[in-house]
Image 1 (cartoon, rainbow, N blue to C red):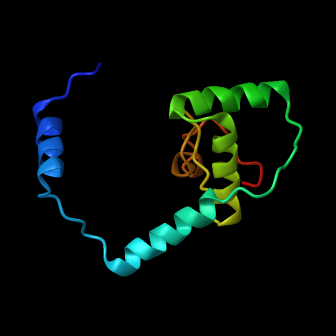
Image 2: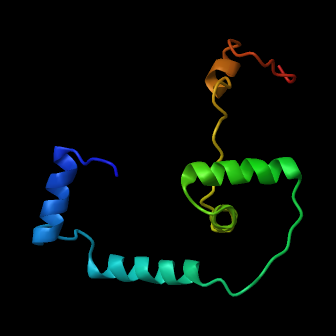
Length: 111
């Protein structure tokens, strides 16, 4: 079992003694509860085909995140349809400002 440090122990003790209080308003709590209920309801089944490589990569990422791969897929789809999925630059890729300054590895074809 993992050992807890002094800070973690302090948080647990504060929680168990009841000295921690929520800072969320009642409206915020109700909004979060409604979102959780809407997200948790899984009333449709979908069958999709993926390449073996993509599925393996998804399974690896899900393992890193500590969740089942189907839950990860559902989460990604939910974020996409609600407009909350954000693209990130892959690690090690040049930044757009570096490319604009001509210091990146890629050359712009319209320059």
